[in-house]
Image 1 (spheres, protein in one colour):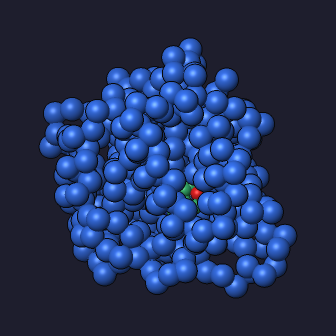
Image 2: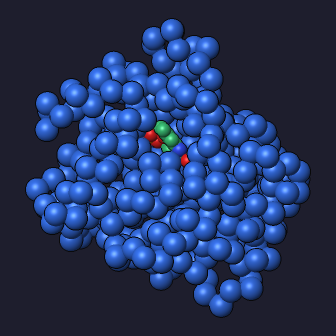
Length: 329
Ligand SMILES: Cc1cc2nc3c(=O)[nH]c(=O)nc-3n(C[C@H](O)[C@H](O)[C@H](O)COP(=O)(O)O)c2cc1C
């Protein structure tokens, strides 16, 4: 396994990503996934949110499986839940390459992918044909070309299309790589967006959880606005947080001018502090904590800060499937 990781580190991040996930899929198809999966498949540490039962508290964060191509194989690794996306109504290629930078020494990644994805219809098909019986959330966003009200229409379109086929939905307003997307944290915008989602939700008979994924870079005033909006509209909880644009968290200053979002160990403190701040204002809001968990200590600290569930992305990329057993066992 170690040897494989050395090879993958030598490849470009996107090639390594594709090889790793496709190998995982093949191993799963061959019925060999048990060799690398966490043994903790029946963890007693279940979490219940309304009617939804998460078999354990560890999930894979959005962005790793944007199009739902790897739901079954990721599910078989032992995660308690999988979040796919971010997906937009129309397929888009994202920003020019290179757009992912690994900072191995600091267990960090900078990415400026820009919601590259195959579009909502492709994902819906994958959701319909999945075998994985665990919790699958879908993270939705707006196309880059959509401006003003068209942006809200994009969220509503994705929401409608995935509602029936997902266990929860995440409204992602926090990617730093789609121009002006983070403006949706502002009072007027967030109300308009969540009101539109609320109205759509009322049209369905079943009540499914809706999460809002937020940025770690907002002011305390904006945080208050977000919490007010969660309380006003039928938002089940917050995903805290997306990547940060603050590169000064990296010791290696050569990345300071690289645009994009920083993830991994350097953002652990910032995103965990945000959970503390939210819990201080409203302890009742369910939180999925994500940002910088690369070992068991980080996992426990996220839960101690008040996260009900935890997601990982960078830790999984840098450490591989072994991290799942380490965090859960
Ligand atoms: C390469 C890459 C792509 C990402 N894509 C998305 C995305 O499409 N949607 C999203 O909500 N978050 C995305 N994220 C953010 C992660 O879901 C997560 O919030 C963030 O990386 C912090 O967690 P981590 O430190 O465990 O990586 C992405 C992160 C990375 C590194």
